[in-house]
Image (tube, rainbow, N blue to C red; front, side, top):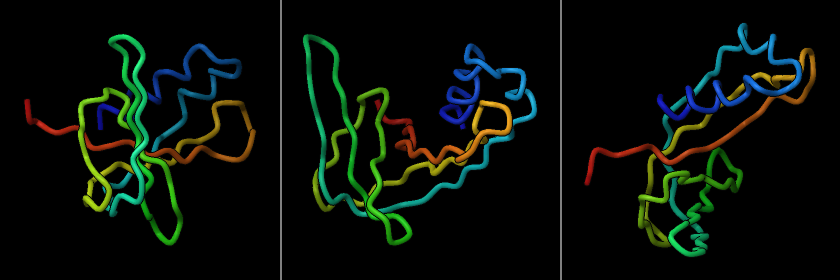
Length: 105
């Protein structure tokens, strides 16, 4: 849920942000098998994302914090979020996917 709140708040500085007050993100927790892993590193910075099958589509699930270490074939849990476009009356809405944070250290 913290991820959904982060994305919701991040629209505050965009044009049309007055519409953000009425936006209600919708999200569900889903799971899927990893098809491919995407990773990059530059200095101490990392990027991690996973190509996963979701409802018959291949989607990229982000790990914005870079804390996971999943491999091809692993089944992961993730948040599927639908957000209204922050530009007043604009379409399409936004569909985003984020790895579910874990309590593991």
